[in-house]
Length: 175
Image 1 (tube, helix red, strand yellow):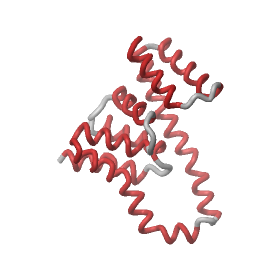
Image 2 (cartoon, rainbow, N blue to C red; image 1 turned 45 degrees about the horizontal axis):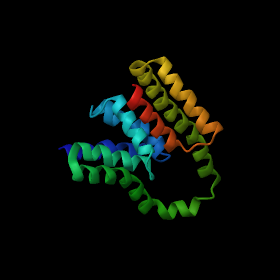
Image 3 (cartoon, rainbow, N blue to C red; image 1 turned 60 degrees about the horizontal axis):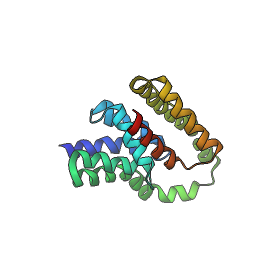
Image 4 (cartoon, one colour; image 1 turned 90 degrees about the horizontal axis):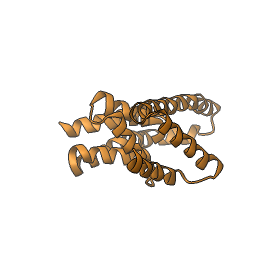
């Protein structure tokens, strides 16, 4: 039964998470944290940070990790398959149509209209992580991490993986 639950938990975000992995993070969080209760928001944030520090698509890394934690190797395989299955099915079924209309103005407008929705979904997950960090480590610690991370990423152009690793070290030693 757990394998079916893993499949459903990652298939749903895969099917309605238009925009790829980053757009479906909020949907995955909803399934893993709120719907099934497999993780807390903090644990999900740690998995997200860890997955972001590794190369490759974020959604499949998260599905592999969560699936492995719940169902071992079989759970990992099911989670990864459930994440890529919607795209795989749609690409097989709709590949010819997409090629035919890829230069269509309507298709272009559709993607333009969907981009703000993706931005809002990412904003919601950022707000949830901010609220959780504020509660668990306090405003000062959260603000320090946010300001330093922003400075290093935007001003110094440091790769986000190094920022995530540094924040993990900081949390391990000081929090």
